[in-house]
Amino acid sequence: MILTADYHTHTPFSHGKNTVLENAEKAKEQGLQQIAITDHGYTHVVFGLRRRKIKEYRAQCEEATRKTGVKVLVGIEANVLGVEGHSDLKETDFEDFDVYLCGTHLCVWYKPFISQFFSFFARNYSTEKLHLKHSDKLIQNNTLAYCNTIKNNPIDALTHVNYLCKCNSLEVAKVASDYGTYIELNSKKTHFTDEELMDMALKTSVRFLINSDAHSASRVGEIERVKEQLGRINFPLDRIDNIDGRLPNFRFKEFKQRL
Ligand SMILES: [Zn+2]
Ligand SMILES: [Zn+2]
Image (tube, rainbow, N blue to C red; front, side):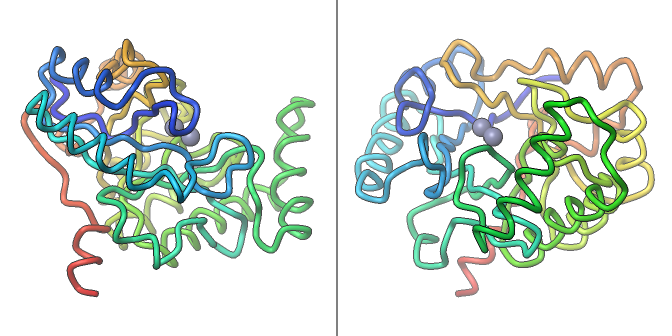
């Protein structure tokens, strides 16, 4: 399995360590055709990308493309804001980005804030920190959060599904397949059991991406953890659209062309 493109990397525009150019140079070294710089969404209280920086963000991606020959896409890893399915990327922001990822994170402005802070964030956080069993109600709620987010927003890929938000991944994968949203296989940390992965692949038509979620240039294109899991369970690799020369069809780009 050879990675064609890595669509999830961070830089100091949120809390990555290396510059856009350094990530792109590493991508070139790894033989990748494309990468996306996907810093954190605007409502991330500490690490969020700032709108006043967006011109510089795009300019650095263009410069890195010119200098390395690797296509550097301008991306964002937006935030799932709760069960109603709001994301923190607004339609007025769409022209600024090529790639739209979305995932669950700590320290964001959930929406509506008070209700989702308690019923979404606090319940998930305390359950995980105290190593409690997730109640059926919580899993149902989390599944709804992911499904509604996919339905309400033209998201290219859901990042690290199950992180801070344990869900029924099979149900999420069905909706993702219907809407053309990819499920990310995140190589920083595995969040799917072997059984969940095979269920999604065999019982739905959802498609997958493998991403590094690199927070330093040294990890760009690094997918060993995912490779090991997929190899062990004999996962059907033809369902992954950023390996072995394949490039994905992104829903966000098509959505913007129709606007
Ligand atoms: Zn993330
Ligand atoms: Zn990330």
